[in-house]
Image 1 (tube, rainbow, N blue to C red):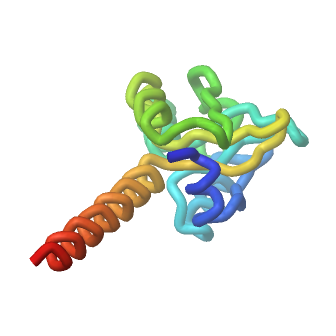
Image 2 (tube, rainbow, N blue to C red):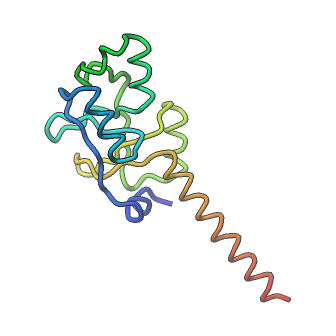
Length: 143
């Protein structure tokens, strides 16, 4: 299954935060939108993903003064992105290998959405349920 199908179901809305906004602003956005990560941008350019884990590590390392620091100061690691044409299998491998739980989806060099490990799991659970229903209906029809 393609990532494009997941985005069709969940939508393409992405909560972003500017590179110079504070860590506290990122936390406020995550709380407001009930999400675990925001995409850090500088204008239209995607620079990284900031997750709850990144914020907790920064506070653990540097203390609560981190809350007032620009979000760009706590982002580490390379930006990993995917396209809408990626398969869920490939994305699961990429997430596992890169140790990330959220991946921005880029199309024509523009932010087209974001997928989380939860989105992938939800999709696969729905797929398994559909398969189970088809097999059950087939078994009933054969009787």
